[in-house]
Length: 229
Image (cartoon, rainbow, N blue to C red; front, side, top):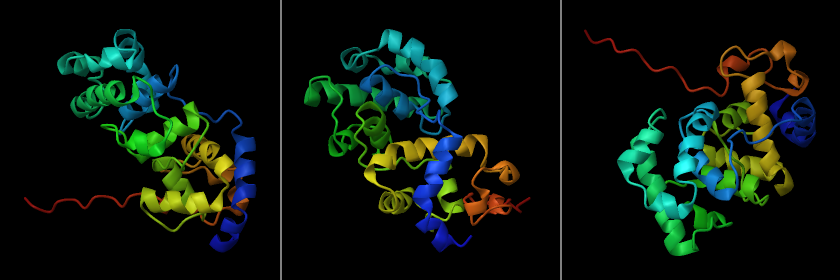
């Protein structure tokens, strides 16, 4: 399978992947747009499992923008301290909540421009909220799984999230953008892992240009070891 053919057949391949993972969905536990926004901000460089472990206590104490805006940072840091970059995340969450109260009457906005203007909210987070909470995706969420799989499947030659997203938006219709990322994430976690991808058990290996040599595709190069004494 050539990469050019793989790209031409990308929509059919996505349908097959969706059949393989009919349960694909956002695994961040939340109730409503605000909780999803908070959880997604917390998920940067952290697993969904780790985020889901801290959000119940967090939401019990600071479950609304108004309450979170009044939180003191040390208390918030204690609640999310097991996550990476917890100090910066705590600062961003308080700033985000204050902005929601001051500029949006405590309501999560349903537009990309308004979301990315909030402290700690980038395009990836905004795309998650728009697609999952509002069913109105304005782009494709590109995390490490989506980046790796879209490269292995021959859907992009790009290496940065922004350019990969642009390629995926061209290759797939808007109505597929949200489920596309969830499906690739599930396949990346279950089958097409970064190390030792299970090509022999993959349901789309016949249309994957990287099949049986995928481990070297879509991964960051190893860091060079220091030779200093």
